[in-house]
Image 1 (tube, rainbow, N blue to C red):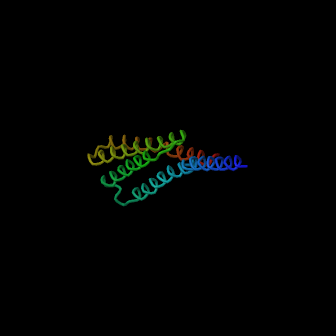
Image 2: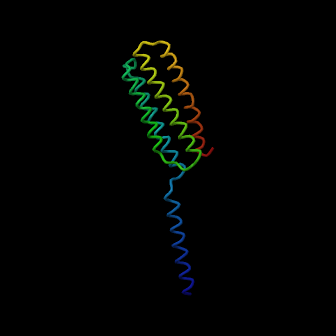
Length: 146
């Protein structure tokens, strides 16, 4: 009888410790939500900048570039264990950095009134934003488990 009591207590303690250890790790959904939250914030802030009446001001453009750079750093700060989520996070980081660089290049060309450089920067900006739709769709599909 005493043996069964000890066995039951040890089993209960072992199961409790196991549950605590596994519950301490972040779930896939929690990690997805962190990535999505930062991406949504970037979209929201970008929309407010692009609807600004001062969009033809290089300072506003540089603020947008700073925003994209800040967003890439925020995205880097997210710790994810899931390999697929790491890949999506890297995709967003690269995209935000490319967007930031293209905006900066455009702002410089705009200030110098260098039409060719501005057109090249605009093409680079369009190319930099191209992966966004696919990244968002793939991330949403992966996170919802479809």
